Length: 81
Length: 150
Image (cartoon, rainbow over all chains, first blue to last red; front, side, top):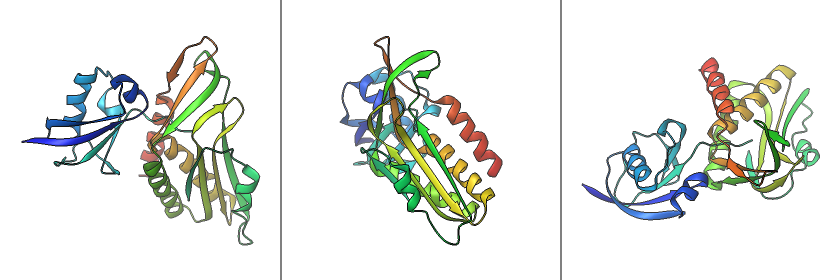
């Protein structure tokens, strides 16, 4: 089933996409499905395993389910410190 | 307690917050902006973060450190925005009754902060180029550290 999701991009993902976020309509069951769909759309080459995801301001796993109306935060490899 | 700031980090002020007459040890770590990374001459660094989750995840890391090691107080402060060479980008401080737990807790906090918090840094080089740092060496260290204590 198609879901409406708000996606936000950070750091290199924002630069690749050229936008800091968008509302998308996707056939996505999990956070990983969202990542792969948008990776091909925006041409990022970063492997999923190096990245992190949050759903509605909570850190999540890539196999976490996504629901209609969720806000998905896609984090490229972090580099604090 | 985790804090994100765009202002200058003052280690002396932060250290004073951890004073406790029950403490026999204090360990502090400061991460500074270095002029070189992987053969590139660095001019400055720009930190970007997603503050709500940087704070909540940082608070989790500090709580984990306090659960693993009997510390009295622990704090971490991380900068965001543009930083010049030599500036302090991250500060971790731990006070405890004895030094061993303060060293271990401080190490745990900085390793996990680098591994888990949604913070990114962009290096600006003398060549005119710039680039986001993936920090894979830090991540691999943090993973091995996590597996040791799991």
